[in-house]
Image (cartoon, rainbow, N blue to C red; front, side, top):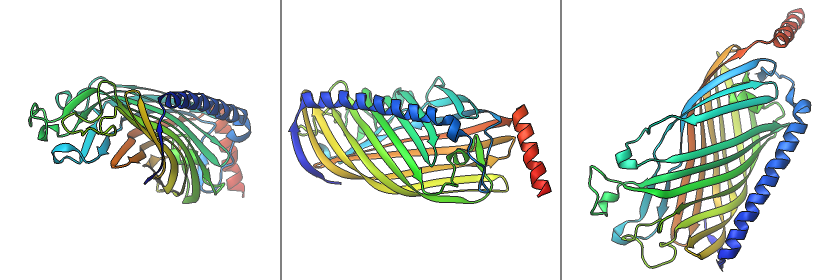
Length: 366
């Protein structure tokens, strides 16, 4: 990834761009919601095919437990022979409860008290994560907002004399990260259903696979509210190493391949894609902002596996969102990911019993 053009300083323009991006994102969400709701009745009742079975007439109740994380690193030519800083957030266990019936689905989640990692070594991290997911014909749409506040620089005792092996990390409660992303997956095969991939309101009945294209729109970055991101003892006099904010706005296309199957009730699916984005990247030091235009690689990776029968299911779901920015000698990499254990039941309704009984009778007669 290389920067192509230096656009120089523009603090006022940067603030305007943030406001414009927020306005445009709200407009996009409004349009997508409008399309989703207007097409719910038309497209909500997808025809079952031989590769999957949908339980749209059953009431689905589920719960999930897992965690979210967003570690990042910043590489550069620092003082004292250091060339890479790793920022780690503390991790909280999150619990969620959900309900789905026909086109409607709702999930409510919250973080449980306490941290998985030692607060003495990693401090405390507050996070906020909200998303919207829906299907329109051969597409799957996802809009996410993630925010993390409170990080620790790992193994800072190697260059910071005030730390030791008992308290090895530099705890920084004012360091934060955020990401806003809007993604659309378009599947070439009409037979491939995202509801079967997710495993709550449907599952596979045999092998299903397709090529896909993912369009992605992202705004993300890291910042330190009090002072520069890089500790003073490691930074030189350049604005880049004294910056308190690093981030990017990008737009791109990722081609990929999706595969799903269910064998003896054991189900698994994988998404894997590799593409690129056009990126407007920047760093800020106080009122000074420098921006660059460039390109960056981007991968798409999602894994879901578990056990599913018509009456119940239990799944392990993972999702990875890997982002990167390179400005001169500085390289910023961040991975937003989550791992969840999901379990639930699919309860019959009067309509589902009648419909499935009719289907079984027809299958026996044929």
